[in-house]
Image 1 (cartoon, rainbow, N blue to C red):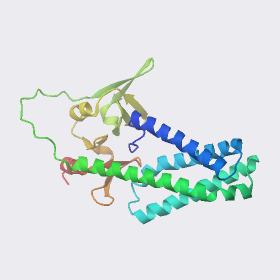
Image 2: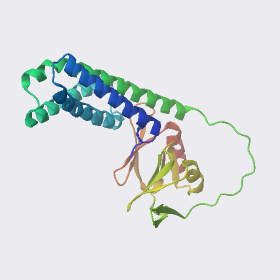
Image 3: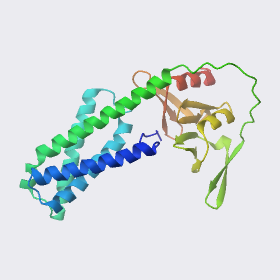
Image 4: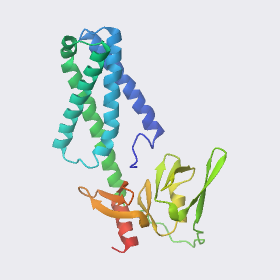
Length: 260
């Protein structure tokens, strides 16, 4: 349930697709130009290899939440390369598109290409996390106090799903996650998408709901425990097994609400 940089931003998704296509073209060209592979087998090889690396790179965002030591990250990169190369060779051999000699000839290219792409992706992930942590540590802007109208707290939320309208009672909400211009509501019965802002829910939900991250609001009634991973990196574990990331500011607010 942790927000992924490619799922919350359409721009990043588009750039990710462009990078994947560019990587595929370069990979295919290297196989045909230097490994002497035929165009069609090289194309199938490329689709498999880039597809596996893309899937591994996507889920690496979640793995790096727990892996902060660079030596372990480098070891993970090597393991991913070996697995992707092995799976590609096995599938291509079964389909009759590859033989051992031609595949071995392209191993240096595969390893170097995959490792470089993986390292670049991990560095980008690290930079995003550092930016999020710096943003979380920044003090909120000081604004002059003004007389505010009392806010009416929500008791239930209506969600339109095609021709149906679902009524979600606030006490059933486990947590809320930002999804671009929408907010995903998580309940024990399922997930619902509402076109609304996180700021609105932050101000219109009862005090049992705490915004622990710019993209997450959690119902404190469903919290099981809070864990510390590395410096200023907190994880909130829920009773249903869900794990959510909390910023430093969100963790402090949670401590205040829970009187810890």
